[in-house]
Image (cartoon, rainbow, N blue to C red; front, side, top):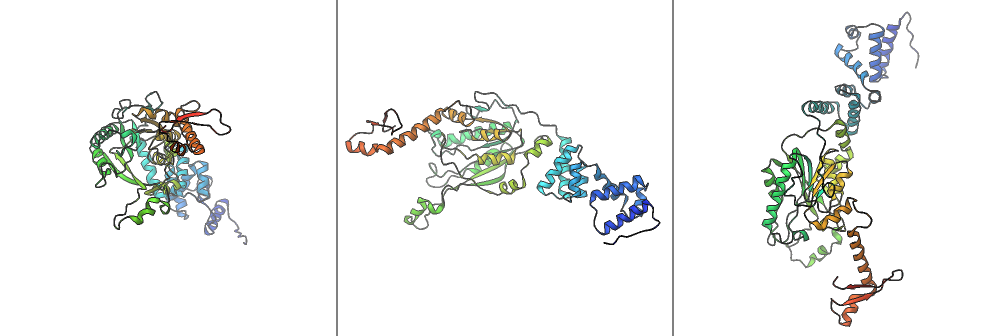
Length: 450
């Protein structure tokens, strides 16, 4: 490109002509423009009015362009590279500290926020900071198992009013599980309502309850399916807690083409086909009111990534259920509470599971830098919970039982006890002797019905 020569031009004029030429060529980024305006004003003595006359824009726009130089260096780099606009920068300058400006710049880029959207979020953030005090430190009540109480959750007196930020749980379905024996449907309803009343007491305003509540397809529903979701909605509405979202957990256990029950459908009379129960609804309730706002550091640390937002905001969650019971008949995969906790709580929040079961929610909450409390009234699940939370030394009782069961199965397979006993005319109660193969050591005596 040929060099343009201007004679009899002083520094002030040269600077202006250089700016005009580079602007025509679109060679300047916002930071270079701001630096040029500062030079024209502070070094060469131009007033804002004079710069306006020379064609640099209105006095207000000139002033705003120069303001972005007050941003932290790392943020200025993003403006220089064109990743952030001047409008983004001006909104960031509304924040009181450079640390907040840097964190918000990072969020803008991660979530691909427009300047308008970023401005609204920043204003809302600033207003919340003025209206709400910093959330108080979470207090975890002491128990024999840290954060877990082996008692009925109809009494959660260990927890203060409005102290829990998120409740993640799966209430008993009353479908004849081992922990539901002897409990009528009416008694089941009474107990659940009492627990929900306690949950409403301890949940903070604006807090969330995420409940996996399946409809009843057995026992009390021989004539028809017993719907349950609307019952929870009515019960919680009485406490100012309202249904806001529904997630479908799609449990793709076995490909439908390989399911024996479907393959046998050829024998079923036409119009009497049974739908496969490979899903459960998860109801998301929110308590009326506004919750306290945590620190900006916790807000940014808790935000979902763009990829997570796209995945978790899908109304259908495809999560493989566990293939083994792990000491409890209803153990959820860890991915389920992990998603709910990440989506509906901040780091440092208190998470509650009033039907703790094997302790999965407690374990996952701790891993996600949250505090957790759980209640479980069935004492037989205490060793299962302790094992899951890593509170056992060496091999736990649960692991010992699991190993014994596997050994029994191996021995039965090896010596074909059942066939031998039947041929010899022995009864189930007869004792049989079996040798553990080769490396095993001592003979083992066991009853067939054990």
